[in-house]
Image (tube, rainbow, N blue to C red; front, side, top):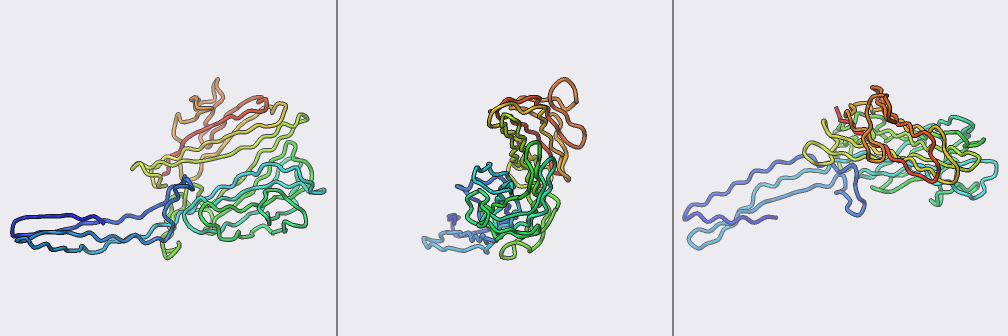
Length: 323
């Protein structure tokens, strides 16, 4: 509450003008400095204190209030491989993290695998230890909705299958309860305590896709994707014209060499690629398919890394603008 004192002889005048704008939580929230929770009503009343002939009076303004919008956003990242025995079942773990500012549940889709891995089902991580344990972690069907997750709470799930992960990829699609939507779309009154819902940078849908390529020398690789948003007003609001910077971190562990490595990412619907923004390990790459490793083909970016001896980390970044 702010106190403003006006002293104008025998005449006193007080005025207050306030405007309320929708509050949208940041896409990249540090849990230590978490954003205000969705549905929170923010109310403010100003005061004017003034004096007339030595007498002090106080007048309150009209109250103004706004309700914090609920941001729908989340990540789906691969879990580290575990060494515990799982019988004849191979398990690939994923972690769903609610990065929004409200309590939300998410829908686990049908996993898709390529290569030598055949999907046989899904299981929930009952004790949240990140490792699949037959007889402890229950099987769940595709289409299962997670429990309500508080902001920055996680839910772990395993894709189960047979065969080998050597040269295979496993993809786990996850959606919000609102399904796939346009980035920045507002759903009126659908959030907590009647607040509006704002669809974050994922568009309400994420394909969690670890890259697991194991050679004879046991080199392993995974790809971790993060994003940062900056709007024209300097905020992290996913509004029209805001810039999203995507960072793709390829992590190669174990021994040996991963061969013919290419990191690729399609440009999300509702956005446009920012020309000249493609980088590898912080160094600029050209958009044209010329002599360097980078290329933008009109629908996506790709960076050819060639042979990568483990251990190593290579980082690709690029930017898009929300249309």
